Amino acid sequence: MVTTGFGVAFLAAALLFGGLAVERSLLLRRWLPYYALGIPLGRVLLPIPTAPKGGGSTAMVRWEVCEDAVLYWAEPRTRSAPMGLHGRIQLVRRGSTVALEVFWAPPWVLVFAALWLIGLGLLRGEGWLTVPVGSSMVLGIAVLYWRSALTAARELRWAFVKGED
Image (cartoon, rainbow, N blue to C red; front, side, top):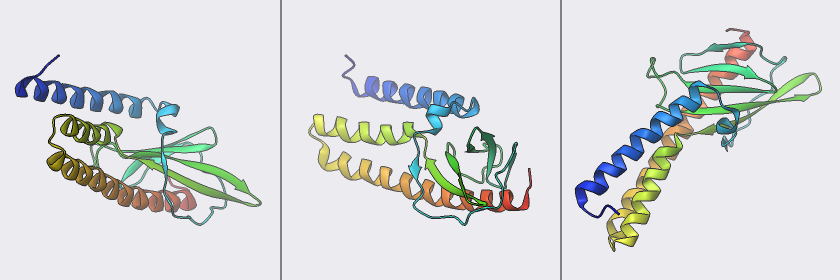
C-alpha cells in the first residue's frame, strides 16, 4: 500500500489521466452503455417534425444517429464545449412529431476524483478540508456541464429542424 504523500499523489495522477484516456476512447468509439449513463437535462425541448438522420456537427458538439437516439459529444478541436461533455437524445415518436428527451453527462472520472478526495480526506481525518473542496468540485462540474449540455441541446434541436449535417 502506498502511504507517502508523493506515492499517493503519483497514484492519483496516474488514475486520473488513465481514466480520462479510457473515457475519451469510449466517447470516440460511441460505446452505447457509456452514453446510457446520462442525467436528464430537466428541460423540455419543443418537438421536431421528423427524426434526424446520419450525423453532423454544430458549433459546440458532433452528433450521430444511433438506433432511436442521437449521441452527441464535445469536439476536442473546437474547444467550444467543456472536455468530455457527452450525452444522448432519445427520439420519441408522438403523433406527427418527434419529442426529444435529452440526457447529458460530464466526464465521470472528474466526479469520481472529487469523491475520492472527499473519501480519502475523511479516512485521514482531514474531512474539514477535503469535504468542502471536493463538494465544490462536484458542484462546479455539475453546473458547468449542465449549462453546456443545455446550450448543446438547443443547438442540436435547431440543427435537426433545419436539416443540417
